[in-house]
Length: 614
Image (tube, rainbow, N blue to C red; front, side, top):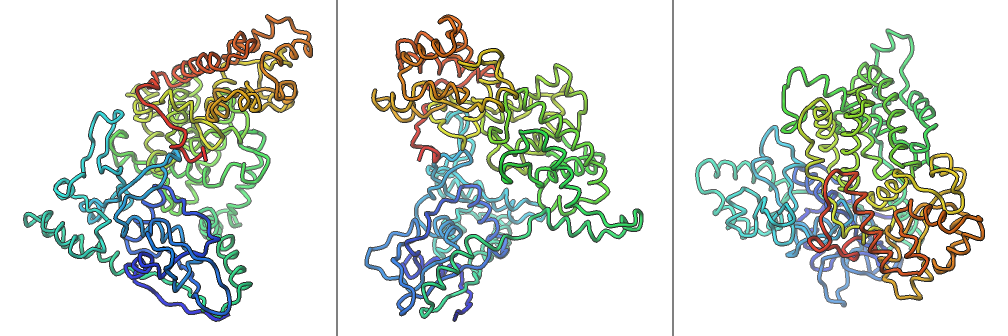
């Protein structure tokens, strides 16, 4: 199969996207990168690191012919014919085009999958600092270029004018390929000798990384047959998985000569991890039905890295965890993890994972599928390892529990985790030992209107509300001998069931977001679900009485344990039911977080703002 492998200047490649010389084959999936991944990609380019090979197909040949469409954000006339079709690299190229070339804010989603518009900036001082974190240098800001907090009442950073950008030293990356605009911006920024020197260093060490960036491309020639194109496309989109940090560390430890000389054999990380996984698989919360629903090796390694780096650096640091945590679990930290540190901490971390599984069970989380954030397990295990049996004391456990639910319901564990892990570990430990509240607790908020937008397990808050209903103690409506616990959950196949069935809601004009939302769902057995079926609540309540032989008031009591007023079901009054249960769930959330929620009228939410609603 004939192909060429030229390298293109990034600016030239983006120009080709803008003019339509490079487009997509129509069968490509839609662009969908989130804000965090875009920031990471921009970090890669600004540092001059490789972003990987892209693949294109020449058009106009006698071989494969596909209908073209422009990359998202490129405004083209419908009759523009491309010279090349982008077969691999759509997500990267679209992200770069929108962030660096388009005159419009990037339309993406945040960590909660909420649709947002973002401009991207780079902080000059951080970018040129030898000790600066280049990932932290990249900043995304809302469409109006103002970062606010306290529900919009307090301005944290205003970049809404060029003067403000220059004063605060944030260069807008949308200008990077516009020489004249960059020049004008520079003259406003470089107002003294210090700033002129900074600009020179920034231009040479950062901007030139972007403007001179070369993108390697595999270009399939126009004679490539369609069968070959389809095969290549399938391979580049499903195969070629790169080595992960676990595999790299495995290779490192296997060659540790000091360990071999002391013990007479090589330490095999893979074998050790398999034993750990087998031991922890007794907990359903760490062992789902598929391989993807299991504890990840990265979770284990990140936990050990947090502990190892903390105890190695802390004696020489003395830093305040509310200013600069000393622990770290970035990829580099894990790859630098000494084998002796791994062997020292692994047994303690395994014990802490057992404790964490028991803790999660007490919180109404009985399976991996219903775990709100797998990622939050890492700092939770690290906290247990640091504090030991102190976590079992009432006061300590109360604080850890509150921190956990602030993370879940505040939806804090979706992005920027490598900085959150050490901060939460150190601040929660300090809090338990008598210090002040962690930032993740003081900053946590839950908007009451968010309940109206929780539809599926894609949301941690959705699974969190589900768990809280189980935690506070609820009975099934046919098997009502005991409160639903792990045994009943497994043996009777508990799952979320619509209280007002979908068919009834459709027939009675209930809005889709209320029909499908968590307010209209509750955990019940499959047997109860079958009795409910598509019936009106007023009908199935009588059917449940006949099926179970329970007196009506007993059934009403069982229904009440789900924070539902049975009277609303007996007359099938959806509006009254929804209002009452919404209020009860808000109170349940406030109790778990230890703080008041934001009223719906103060901070409204719209279901269409969240990607999970699509």
